[in-house]
Amino acid sequence: MVEWEQIVEQALQYWEVFAEWFLGMPIYFQVLLIIGAVATIVLAVIIVYYVLKGAAHLIYYVLKGTYLLIKGIFVGIYKLFEELFYVISGKPRPVKEPSDKKCCKQPEPPHQSYEEQEII
Image (cartoon, rainbow, N blue to C red; front, side, top):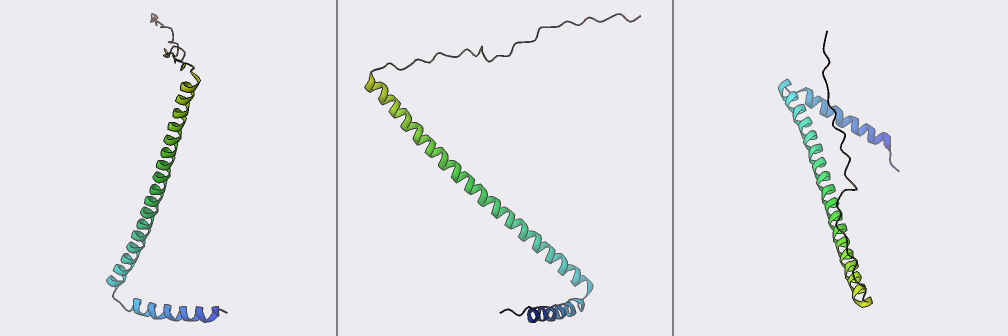
């Protein structure tokens, strides 16, 4: 079983040794050490962020490519069987009429004229 009290005592002992060493150094060394530690932590966080972001992009694009590949295969199979259906049945292929897009156009608002009124 883990003895937490012993672990805490040992950690406090190491902390005291570190604090004595750190406080025994000149002030400029202390400042540089703190700046270096903060910079190291920030850089580590940035690197982890970009690695995770890159992995997410990689997974996304692999899944997207797989989806598009499978979709293309099934659309091709569908068109093949559709063509076979028309060949075997002897039915003519339905002709699609070109759409004139008249159904989708928005009516233009009536042109309004504006007359200035005389200022008295």
